[in-house]
Length: 303
Image (tube, rainbow, N blue to C red; front, top):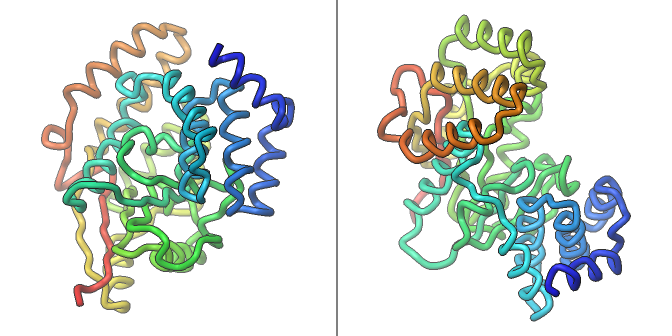
């Protein structure tokens, strides 16, 4: 009965419309909670459950809090996939980001803007938070020109995004993130550490898997920690930096994930990820010398 009801509402709001049409509509009217809600229902109909819950939480943040929205939110939550079988590299960084957010909050609700967050999987790692997604390819909201009023969110986060932004736009991007935060921003990002290893490994990933992200890393180049420190110093910001992951482990799992996908061994892939996600935590694999990425917190100075 619930499934039939949701399908009916999806048809009413344009079930047959494509993703691109919703992206364009949101891009033109990004703070319209009704469109985000319609998009959440559409994504559910397409079984894109992570995007669906991210968009309905975005609609909630933008004031869609009536009983109908809550009813459909429960339906969507009942269909959510298990996060413990998610690709380990993705699981690890989202879990790390969730832990960082919780460590900065003493309890209760807090609001998060997830910039460049793909299909919004972070929302499933922080169910306690008021969550909003800004992802140009998924919901038409660009991190270079965020439409929200200044200081709308307790925290603004961006995970593995900065390296995909051309060098000339990076300062503007970070400025935008900071302008929307009350407390500060959290960047979880690969940074320039060992140039020869990074370039060789990403060329190998490109050669074997054809991954677009590796191509963009090579074209845009990785940001430097020194530049982030300089940015913070010039603006009088607090800064905290800590390593995240180990580059060699991450690289090995990129290939493991790729070859599992080619073998069509879904159960084997799920079992591998379930084991890694249960056992490979930050304490075990964060490397001071050769991290995959760094978690960088930039905050306003204490008054």
